[in-house]
Image (cartoon, rainbow, N blue to C red; front, side):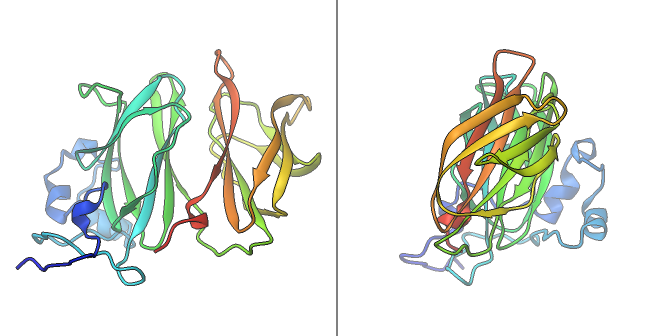
Length: 266
């Protein structure tokens, strides 16, 4: 029986589809699974994964503070193509996502999802097929990274802790495959050293306002990239994404992005 959830958001309105059921995992081509395992082994290896039971669900109400949800956004940090399309469990959730751009955060239920990434406007040969696990009451950024034909997905957990209005949080995520190991200077003070590819730094607490940021080569001390007027709001968390390809015209770039804890509600 379908309930009538008048004036209540339900799963029908969600962009991200429901997680994979156990039957869907079993029926999938085993070669597509990252570890080539079925649902039973997934459950043993990853007990925290919530595989949705095999039931027919018309719609699930989303009630603030009650319904267990997560938030997920996609970030295109893959500079080898102008844009990509992203599919989740066979449903297109991001169309023509250009390099350097983010989708909005979307609600998602905890569970296991199949992610496919294609060059924008095509569906013939995927650039990437992988699986991710979302845990309830988490906020995620799924970054598409790599160069050439080497493409991967980095699932990055964003902050969920409350932030005092008189403070800002900032961290660094290095997603440029060929960039040198680097140091980060905030307002000409060294705050992080030897940042390497795929590294996700701890959060730093800083006063809100305007700040300068410099990324320097760890060996030579030369400036790789800089942001001379980075504005941070109080009560907000930010990630400094280091992207681009130093081997071509794109070059190394700094993207300062506000995280969902600053404006999302569970």
